[in-house]
Structure formats: C-alpha cells, structure tokens
Length: 138
Image 1 (cartoon, rainbow, N blue to C red):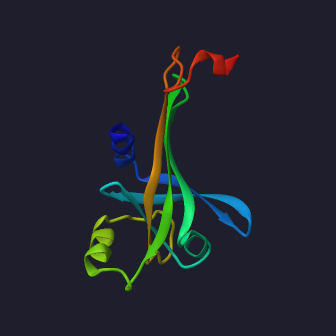
Image 2 (tube, one colour):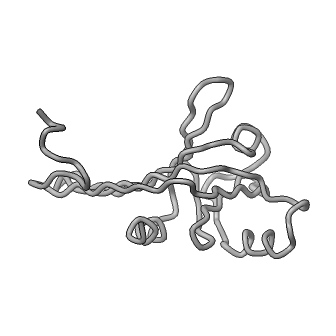
C-alpha cells in the first residue's frame, strides 16, 4: 500500500467516480494528499452535492503507450465536504494541501476522501499484473 501512496503523491490529476441521479459519473479532478487522505477543490454543484458523505472511487494512472506499460491506483472511500463545521485544524490542513485546479472559475469548496480500500496494479510487458495468475487470461 505504501507504493500506491508514493505513486499518488507523484501526480496531481485523477478521476473521481460517484453516483449522480442513480447513474455513475467519472470526472477528472486535480487533487493533493493530506497524509493518506485525498483532497479535491471544486465548486458548488454536481461533484459537491453528489460526493458529500457518499462512497466514491478515485483512480490515478500513468501509461506508456510505446512500451505498453503503466500502473493504476484505485482508492475507494468516503467523501465529505470540509467546511466551517469541522475543527479548525482539519480545515487548515485541508487548505494547506494547496490543490491548484486546472479548470477555470472559482473552486472554493473542499472535499476529502477518507480511504477505506486502496489497491494498485502495475503492467510490465511480459509479466502478469500484481496478484493475477495466468488462469485469469484463459
């Protein structure tokens, strides 16, 4: 699991998966880490209303098309909006992560994803992915 967090720490864009109106939705977001908690800045709207106190998925990957190799980290956890009702030190730590959204416009709302399960997969040419035996490909 430490390797998964090292990989997450080296990137700033991932995909947030959540359910909106009974339908799955996957949205690219900028993120940062507060220890092992994922921090996202967003605006009021779809992400914020659907993610607050919801089970979500978050994925980051890195692929090399030329060598056909790469890795993926999947985090499943509970999302919550961070606001004035939280302890001052939690709000300060969340803001200190310094997530800098690429999307234009005001992004003054903060969401934390508290991990419940973390898994990773690495694809190396000629090798089976982590934890997969060759019977899975028959």
